[in-house]
Length: 412
Image (cartoon, rainbow, N blue to C red):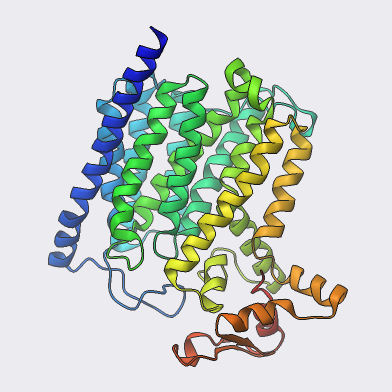
């Protein structure tokens, strides 16, 4: 009887995920034609946009439609508490992102929309972090602490995902990886509505990635990145409660508060890295710039495709390190330390690893690796050796100390 039920669940989930993929896959060409007819493109500039041609940025419409329609018709939509509040939150973010993609909104207005959406699912759907499961020695926390912590988590994840949406296929692919892992854990723990939630998002993103993976013919825009970050934050928050479920706790113990950090490590790490880097220079963290991890990889000579695949692999490697430690029952605080240490080891760290290697071994290992990819460093600029790129595309605008820091930030 139980096997039959699992089989039926699996078939239903598979059909709904296929529906989500098909909706997204079919919608993108329609959106692209409409964007071309109305000249709704994202034009390249010199600040942070790396594409060379005008490309539509309305892919978030397809992600929104595919997720909302597929999850709504699934047998488990009613199992999501306060589903109407979730729909309301998604509509607010959808129209806010759409307007920003078309006419550009101020950061304050976008933040207001994000806070409103977060409030709807926190107070309407009960999506809230009320237990740290031993992290920092904390277990259950009071409601008045849980609410601001949850607001902070939602806003951070939304904007972290927005920040990594800079090269073809990166944000969408990280979203797929995270949603599949979240969904698998929810399914194992018997939380089928949340598993369906995750897999519907993964299906929608896969349909979008068919057109967004390098060379991209469409971008998700703020419409897509805000929706993606919001939906990932909900999965992360709901995941934290899994240690209360015996099926999950028997395997991973009290690690449910840390594993989401590992799953979303790349966007979170990139955000912290950029904040630290700009604070050191006295620059605003809200200004656009080419100082994200994916920018550094492009300056090292990686193509969009190779940089994206490399960051997929790094993200999976980190999860592969932390996951077995959670299975072994490592203390949550030690596990958090493992996430932080692994992130520092795996992702670029503003030249800290390069400086350490140079001091210990007296050898500029990063420069050697970079030459292998056709890039040479000097104190003032980064320039190609192979002649396949224009020197201007690799030069830093500022010289002197800032340029040296920028060159140093291209770490392993």
